[in-house]
Length: 353
Ligand code: SAH
Ligand code: SF4
Image (tube, rainbow, N blue to C red; front, top):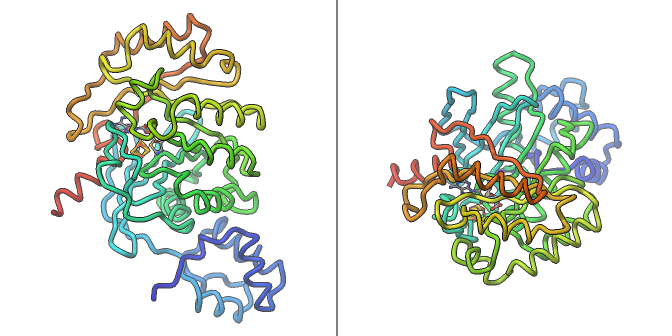
């Protein structure tokens, strides 16, 4: 059987695991620093760790498990990685360059069961959840790629917006966040980490009650149930009112700002009346909510949708602003390299078939 990657353990879990086997607490911290600060990829390189401890780790764990299948580099510096998992499944990870730093977008599941009608990821049903280790390793692989370039660049931001619904893989997603933000490791600040969900209300409540303390984005995408159900079938099970109740609980509990994501689909949800209805829906939450307008990335299989024109996007933005809603338009990255979520993966899979 394949050994699991050690990247899946939080520092507490590693400390407990080594402790149960007779190793003192500082050993875990030592190993942790080798993994995330010095970023070695073999246990044998952990030169100041006691040989017995190195042997124990190597007997039970491995470090790297992902194989780089394809890497596409865009003119704007975006790098899209396609990784092969040990079972042969392919997943995507994206590195984006912003003015404020370098961010990585990670995948949480192989495929997605939510099946939103505009999304390339939902074209393929979920075949399994990723382990916490497989999610952490995506960030580590990108960081190792940067290390190799030798420009002393660090991943500073993280978005959980790749393939999959993170709240449908809640425990692994939580462990992943604990590893990535640990101040003795990569130490990505919680305010620099954003998890996006299609709106699993009970998990939003659990997230609000948790100690994770990272940002939340909600894929709202429509101002009313009629449109939302049409484009996101999850809205049948969790309609907007139920979603809003969970959001209100989150806002009340955390007092943190939330992002409401809104894909603009030509003539479907991008008209002035939709902007006005959206402003009304956001209502009193406006002090703690930012609407992020996302230009639709065309997906071959979803030809029923077209991207809104630049003018419509600007008009929608202006209408929201006039209603006192804070909003922004998402900048696009790597449009020359199959940038839409899940697109590179689905193209490669089609090619292989
Ligand atoms: N499953 C989660 C996170 C992954 S999707 C979620 O749905 O929130 C991340 C974001 O990309 C979501 O807001 C999603 O709606 C959006 N997205 C999906 N397909 C897209 C497309 N073709 N063009 C633009 N954005 C898309
Ligand atoms: Fe899944 Fe998110 Fe795509 Fe919907 S938008 S199918 S929830 S990945």
